[in-house]
Length: 399
Image (cartoon, rainbow, N blue to C red; front, side):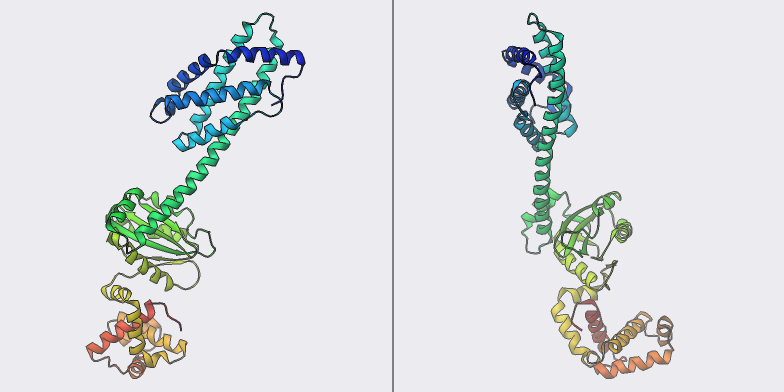
């Protein structure tokens, strides 16, 4: 900051500051005692050590007094260093600023007492000194906040990287048991419980397809951890009980801006990698645009997902004749087959679901038999068709 406006005032301020420098240890003692007594964060000496706090106060006092007499802008390096240190120690910003206000109040009290002890010191000097102190307090507080925010940002970025690595460790099937335990402990996840894995499509690199989802799910008393990848946002959700699944899915639907696949519920955290594969399969099954689908938890679906390459090759073999048809014709027959299965083999019920005549259903079923060489009257052939159709519809493949 600029020095006092007149040579006489500047000389008087210099005299006061020189006298104050002789009393620096006493002033630091008073400030330290008040900060320890009046500000909760500083009361615990195991966080900010006594020697560290005293050294920080002494540095700040030196720079403040120098700012009262030195030319140009004040040196704010001590304030910035203090802000960075307190952020690293987890000090609330409001308590750090309270310490600065208290410190400046004590320094001002000491300056007034020192000035009054100097013979002939006029009140006009204290008036100018008060303005300088007010400016210095703002500058030092702002510099401390700037250092605090810079360090907080770096801590946040480091924490995000660490959390991303921990989430990745949980989602990798080859992770060692000890590593899984350490990751779970750090992320505050149980090893056994009720879990879901969520895979949300990322439409733009770096853009979250489920904005504010962690806090929205937390409102349900459900914890979750997330990792944003270039193509996917992946989350592991830990539920207190299975009955919360529908509520979580409803929140996901409200927040999604893209396609979202969700795994079946699973009970062991070590199954997260397997659950992610199922969540991605559910996502791939969705049409373009915002939407959510949960992988259907059935033994046959899980079996297909467990060996996707083999299942898809088997599907191509069983459905070979149908796969040679034009895509629209092929998909119509497969849709009819699924409706026939859902109707427990009733052409009448399947026709009602498809809005067509039962004879149309029967005709399409005969075409399926002809195209695959399987008979719908033979249980083993039906089992092969069911498995092949599930694999074809469930697994990603080129048309």
